[in-house]
Image (cartoon, rainbow, N blue to C red; front, side):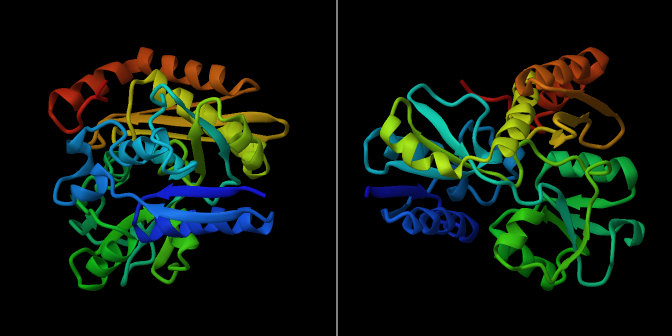
Length: 311
């Protein structure tokens, strides 16, 4: 049996994810230890993510540890992984996916439709902001950073009437008591890869890849590969107003995707089916660009609302 070292961010959710993978590996008789690594994204907590613009801000330091041989694998929220990995790394497995949709959390309101005019809603995601504004332009959207506990504490303290979080993280941490509504993907298209874990290793490390093969879920891999191809074709990082949600239906992939202006004034939607994940994602991306997605994204970068992916 192998001795495996896992690299992980130090947030509560990241540690839960690393422990989850660790437990699955230990069940197979492997010895596992976890090394906590603080990333750029963890250190910058007072600026909206969309304004930071550092490609791989939640992964760079972990990849450095991986390259140096300090850890053998890294456990990431897949939506934090850039669509193009730096040379020398590969995704060995994508795990069975938790619910990819977003959750509406509130103390006093049962859905975003019930929020009063001008209600204060917390999210640092341009994707969530744009889709909320498209259906409720009256809402007052404010930045919200920090780990899940920090965000929930701010809600409890009355700083916000509601906050939007990924339902997957809340469910994994057992913090579902504030979820009042799972927002349908047709209203709020999730982020590419949301709800799935990506297990990253050194490129060509076939021994570790084989040990991790049992973690790979074919449906999750197909769906998220499709979503990430769409995101890549649009040139977007995880903080631009792009949504992508693919699922296997009747033996083929169905992809819903959106590109939106952050103020919700323009929202382009695409829906299509196919069998080849990357081809489907690329075709949807090209269609959205042709229909005006390029202008929306150029305006987003031009206004400094998001920073283009860095080389």
